Amino acid sequence: MKPVFHILILLPLLLGAGCGDSEAASASRAWVWDLPETVPPPRVPEDNPMSEAKVELGRFLFYDTKLSGNQTQSCGSCHQQAVAFTDRLAQAEGSTGEEHPRSSMSVANAGYAASLTWANPAVVRLEDQALVPMFGTDPVELGLEGMEDELLRRLRDDERYPEMFAEAFPKALDPISLDSITKAIAAFQRALLSFDSRYDRWNEGDETALTASEQRGMALFFGGSTAAGATDALECFHCHGGFLLSQSVDHDGNEFNQQTFFNNGLYNLDEDGSYPEGNEGLFDITNDPADKGKFKPPSLRNIAVTAPYMHDGSIATLEEVVEHYARGGRLLESGDGKENPNKSSFIKGFFINEQEKADLIAFLHALTDNKLLTDPAFSDPFAE
Image (cartoon, rainbow, N blue to C red; front, top):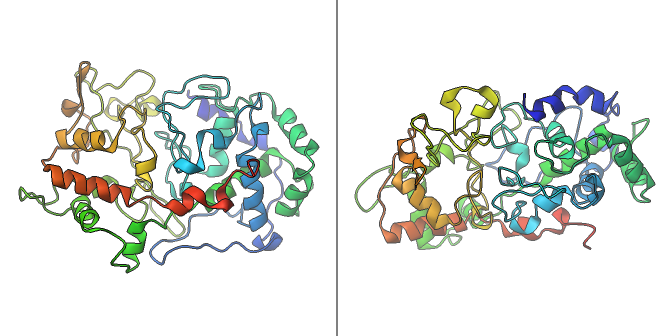
């Protein structure tokens, strides 16, 4: 059984009786979603309504190193604003120095994710997901196992937190609790919206927002014809479509389970389509051989600043990513991903010329939301 399941099973014990957090959003100034007309609001749990006070508390907690056992890391250590809340590492490194098998996924627009890790369909609430880096041991991330009381002591002894927790959770008998910590962090993450790229401005009617090259790349991405005459050759939008540019999406009012996991031919270590042991995607949860190498398709928003790429950071540049998909799978000495029996039918390879490749990459750069990368509302308050 994977450590995440141990954490989720222990959730009632860790959270205790809860905060009685049924207060209305009027606990502080009401939260207002600032979204384009084409984007629905994220799903918000009834027991964790949004408020400005809760989001601001979550921002402090997100960046506070008190949330690691040895007080060397925070959530923000692996999710840095300047690189769209990733960390530039191929594989993340925990507070004790342990290298992780996977890269840190961006938490921008995390409130829209149908599942919250690379390949675990059980983790669907941000409130629950926060427990994984805090208390998980395989691998160690923040390293708080067995330190719940110490964590609460640290926060209660901090001069700023008693008032902040009381404002964010005004009806709680004991505002500083593990329940309120995870709820505040989740509220901050739901506030990390990223819909202000030049691509978004184009969609809103600004015909000057994209260059001619970016427009050509956008057409290719969404199924346009290549110079060779192939229509829908690239297939990008099948896995990276919709307002999130990922098919794995959830939002307020959605009634369908849109969790998706795909094998993109990154590895094929044997004729059965294996990926490196212990990092085989959905298979590590289900033990179904058909799930080997299946991972969630991440959102492509801000993709130009989140290198390196893939679940294990094994592709360094966008140019190499395009070459991988153009070939229809990666060729390594250990095996040919193009022949992986579990590979998605959308990964079939294509031909584009150098100009088309440049156009496609130009479009991917137009997905960067520079406001997200610099907005003081999302920044590290301790750095200020």
